[in-house]
Image 1 (cartoon, rainbow, N blue to C red):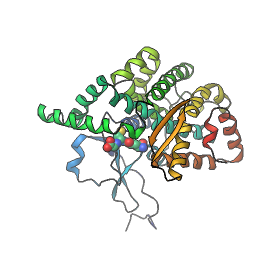
Image 2 (cartoon, rainbow, N blue to C red):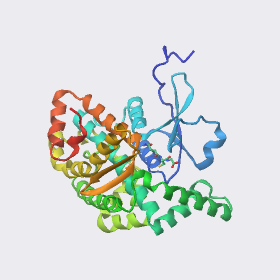
Image 3 (cartoon, rainbow, N blue to C red):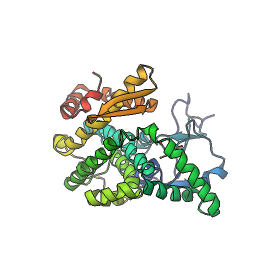
Image 4 (cartoon, rainbow, N blue to C red):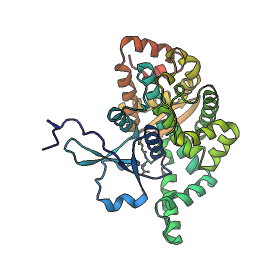
Length: 354
Ligand SMILES: N[C@@H](CCC(=O)N[C@@H](CS)C(=O)NCC(=O)O)C(=O)O
């Protein structure tokens, strides 16, 4: 009945071309596009309302990008969330892997990808909807990405609607007048760290790109390339990062030698500063969020980088903390010891529950 899939437990292998819905202003759409290009996986991107006429299923949570993939019954199902999606692609397509086999590198890749997806995106959303020049830019262009032929009046109405809605949601990611300096200084430190990292090696984990690169790139497609305030900062302070974002866009011609992953011995020197930045800002945010959720509070109040941080709790990010720990528990004791040594003193060690 279901193409020989027996008890129907496992989803069927992904078929090409893989269809998904997305827009250029969605960092996670860009993450998946660049990932698929590097992996040589054929895709069809359904932009804006192109998916509407295709009678495709709806996801449980409406997020972009939305992928349409076979379920165990060989029916198309709508699937969201780039991080697990990438793991599913990695298991169905083996050439040009974007997750290293070495367990220590794979764990660090997971952690850095998660930081990019969940923390760097705060800077992206903050800059876009906090400053007038950025609000004007996003308000003007976002509606045109999905309805470019609509009458001007309708576009202006959409622009007002989107801007008001997103500005009213700034607090959801923790952007407010109290946290703005924490977010902005963290963005500037990240740029500096990334600029010197990619001067030493082209990608986070060596000479070939990993999913962490696609996660970082995703936020930079907006921060460095679209929103005027953070783009000017990037151009001024980290031109190498500005250029890197263009390069990661299409790595279809980049070689994929197994020996191109960095050696685990050089992790401390290469990634120490980035891990310390993650430990400085993202670790306390995840921990305070999990504590507040557990205590049944609606809001978390903590100190990040020596300054107050207030934000409504974010149940998804409590899961992020659990998933980081699941990744850690998958490791054997030798790999755990290596991770412990690398994370020691970075602040990231506080995220691991032993
Ligand atoms: N964790 C998800 C996040 C996806 C996400 O948040 N997408 C945004 C657009 S970039 C979205 O669809 N937000 C819903 C909305 O704006 O209503 C992933 O990695 O794919």
